[in-house]
Length: 346
Ligand SMILES: Cc1cc2nc3c(=O)[nH]c(=O)nc-3n(C[C@H](O)[C@H](O)[C@H](O)COP(=O)(O)OP(=O)(O)OC[C@H]3O[C@@H](n4cnc5c(N)ncnc54)[C@H](O)[C@@H]3O)c2cc1C
Ligand code: FES
Image (cartoon, rainbow, N blue to C red; front, side, top):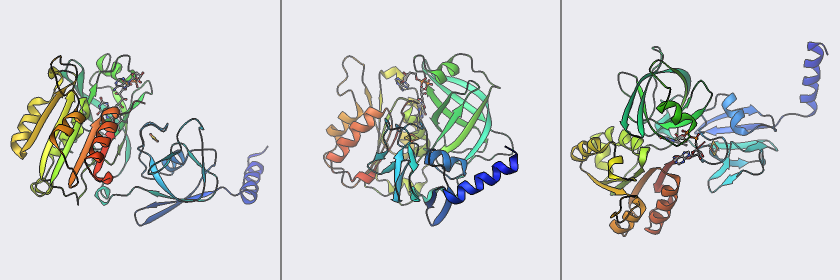
């Protein structure tokens, strides 16, 4: 069929079978897009350049959850979750009607713009036998902005994409750092621990995530929970605390779980921070023979009997996060005062 005949046919089809539209509410802003009802709302939102959050694209990480204010959706993949406690998984939801979708909105992100860019490996430093710090250099014209606690997605030349939390607050040198733990037969970590070298080109997109301190966070006690490399974004948050914010967080405690004592690859950084901001540090080791308790969530029940005026930020192993959430809610922590970033696998 000649091209203009095909275009006219497409126009006629759209007139007769209009595509659903979605109003995305982002704070006070409303962005309307037409969507293809065979594609996920996440794909449509990303194509339209909307500031959506995501990582796994398959209903596991929960990063893409948004509130459905009006309309009906169905699952692109019926074997994956469509609904969570807080809304719908945009990565698995397709429009069956016109929709109104409210994206999580945070004024703290007003100056943070998502970007996609090549990123060159500047350095690889082994922080322990199984943790490498990857330092990335962005093109000179770029000034990447993010909030401490957020993550980026990295893609290597084999087209493997994984999410990694930024391990330090934005710095003048504009270098970005992430800490990657070796996973046996892991596609991305095998690359970093094997053939990766300075000068390699990766692709970076982000920043994503809501694992950061809000401007109005206040608590009489603030508890940070980490396992393994989950410590990296937490130290980025803590090292960037202003004196006012430090005062607003009350007593601060940091619980860090590792298999062995030797796995505490940032112990000296934690010690410096502890004395600088007055932080109570508690370490647990799940595989040390005499260790008791062995998990951060078990220590919590020992140390606290009431968290009703607390704030908890947890990052790392998804099982730790789920169990810690239950423990905290039992200790009467309000549900919206538990913030987490589970390192789900892709
Ligand atoms: C928001 C977010 C932030 C993250 N930040 C970090 C970070 O800062 N540092 C970091 O090291 N990781 C982080 N992760 C995890 C990271 O994205 C990868 O999942 C991880 O590096 C494994 O990727 P891989 O390609 O090496 O292994 P894959 O090829 O994905 O996995 C290989 C096999 O190992 C299993 N597996 C994957 N991860 C683990 C694990 N942790 N423990 C045991 N088995 C596993 C898989 O199920 C699979 O069977 C984050 C994840 C998310 C969602
Ligand atoms: S991107 Fe939708 S749940 Fe992970």
